[in-house]
Length: 497
Image 1 (cartoon, rainbow, N blue to C red):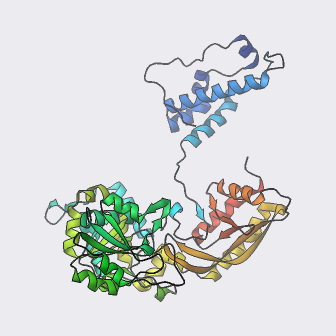
Image 2 (image 1 turned 90 degrees about the vertical axis):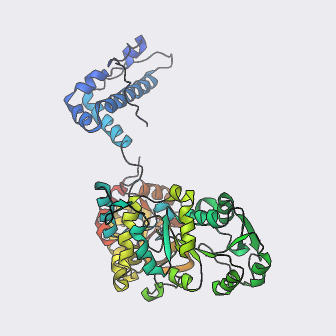
Image 3 (image 1 turned 30 degrees about the horizontal axis):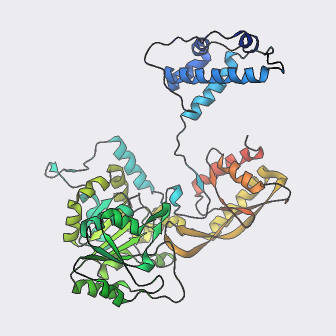
C-alpha cells in the first residue's frame, strides 16, 4: 500500500461525523487519539508524523469499511459491533508502516543451482570490494581528479593499468554493461556502415535483447554471412565491401550448436581483416581473465588469448566470470579505444564511482592467481567440493524435515549446478543439495505452495521445481550463511497466511 504524506495545508485530525448506521456499528478511535497515544510515539519517531498520520487514516478507513460490511444484516441495517481500542490499532499500524518502508531490493538465498544468476544479481563481490564500495559511499573520491597534477583526470585511469596488465591489450575503457560496450563500439566504428557477423552468432541475451537490435540502435547495418550451422571464411571475404565497418565475432555464450557445423575461428579471420584494413572485433560476453582449467573447471577462452590471437577490440562483462561489479569492458588497440572514448555515447554509458571502487580491488586479486579460489567469491563458489555441500545437506536435512512434517519427504542427493549468465552453457558442475517431494499425490499443488512459502521467509529461499520435486542446490549457501538459513526454517511449520 502506498502511504501518501500529509497535505501541506492544515488538515483536521478528526474524521467526519459518522452516519446513524455507522454510529451503531463502527466504534473506532479518532485519528488524533491514535497519534497522541504513548504507544504511537515510537512510530512517529521512526517514520515521521506525516507518514504515520497518513497510514493511520487509511487504516481506520479500511477498518470502518470492513466493520460496516460485516455488520450489515439482511435488511440492510447495521448491527451493533464491538469497539476497537488504540492499543489494538497500534500493532496494525506498526505492521503497515514497516511493510511500506521495507526495501524492495532484498537479500535471498540462491539455491537455484545457477551460480551467476542474472535475476539474482550475478557475481557476489569479495570482501575487499565490498569495503571499497563502503568507503566510496562515505567519502569524496578522486573519481576524475589527478592527485599528482591537481587537475582533472580520466576515470578510466583508476583501473586501466590493471586491465592492460591482465589482458595484454594496449588500452581499455569501462561502461555500464557488456551490451553497452558492444553498442558503443559499433556506434563508433560501424555507424552508417556494415558490420559482418555469422548467422550462427546472432545471439539473444536475457530480456530478449538481440545482437541485431543492438546493431540497429548503434546505426550499423547487419550483414549476415553463412548459415546457422556452417559459416566459411569465403562467406566473410565475399561480404566485405567499401562500406564495411568491421568484422564482428560473437561468442555463443548462452547456447551451443552441435552436429554438422563449421565456424571460422579468430586466427583465420584476423588476416582477412588486416588485408582489408578493417577492425576485427570480438564480443566475448562472459569474459574470463584466467584459464579456468587450472582450477578444475572447463576451459573458457580468456581475454588475453583473444587479444593474442589478433583481435583489435574485445568486449566482455565484469559481473560474470570475472567476479566483479556490473560493467562492460572494452580492450584493444589504443587508437580505436581513443575513438571510442570520444564518442558522446561514452559519457551516457560511463560507470560511477561505486562500480570503479568495486572493480579495482577485484582486478587486484588476479595478481595472485594461486590465491584466487580463496579470495574471489565467484571462483570459490564454482570450485566448492561436492563433499562440503553434501555435509551441509546432511546437517540441514533433519531440521527441514521436522519443519515440513509428514506432508513432505526430504532427501539429500547429488545434483548438477550450472555456471549461468551465458558462461559455458553446456557444462555442469557436480553439486549436492536437498530434494523435497510431496509424500502423497493427493496433496494438491503441494510443491508450488511450498515454493511460495520458502519465498515468503524473511530471507527468501530460491529453489526450482523439476521432475515432481523441489530442488535446493547448496552450492551457493556459504558457510557463514548456513546458521541464518537453518534458523528461519522453523517458520515453515505453519503455512504462510
